[in-house]
Length: 281
Image 1 (cartoon, helix red, strand yellow):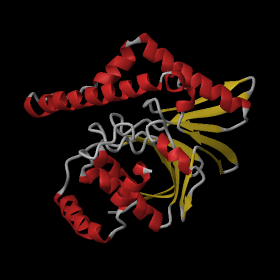
Image 2: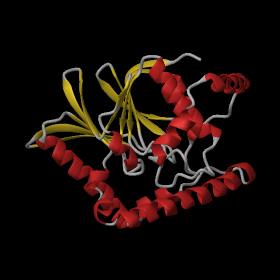
Image 3: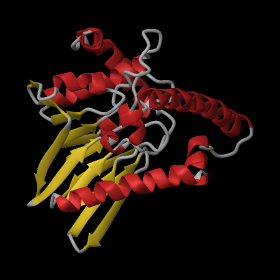
Image 4: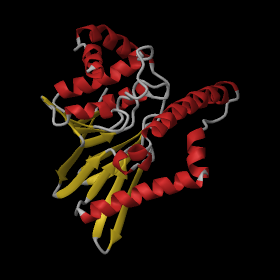
């Protein structure tokens, strides 16, 4: 399988360890690219909802894929989010090409790009973390219900996919206001700091928009998520684009390749032990 060579890829909000995570899609996407730099912009592993009873092989394959990219020379920045905030104790940790940070500034073709997850602007995270965690559980249950409904809609009724949470976001004024306020706050702060790009995740709303004010011009980018939108940001040859992953049936060649990878996985780094050590500390 040929890989697309790109300078930079940004993904966030994978939520490994939850029922809503589209791990197979994540693995296929990462397998399709060969980036110089990969930014994992928060909520990659959902430690809030992590359970020893639910960690499928497809989720472990994503972790193994990331380590394989590391060994192949990709520089990887893991920026912590709210669902994996436990990893903030490892800020500034370096392991070869892997670096764990809370925020990151990169220079891209003479322009400054500011990366961070975005939960710092979430009021519920600051003052009512228990409410935010409860909301996370509710969201995961909604995604599970949504998956069941989509199975019936696609396989039995022959209709398209539905998204309950998107309907909620689009229909509830407070949700729309939260997203608008989040974007506005992020943009204003980036303008004050004289950054050319500001790149976030957290709100599961993929976006690229350029804003010009009296303070200057900034491009706001949000990498979306891998629960519903299946989106990533890619930067190459001075241009940003929002990549939408399209779920397609597995080919026989892909099935065979997957079987070969499973045979090889026994010889790879035991990432499971590493992960369990991190969580237990």
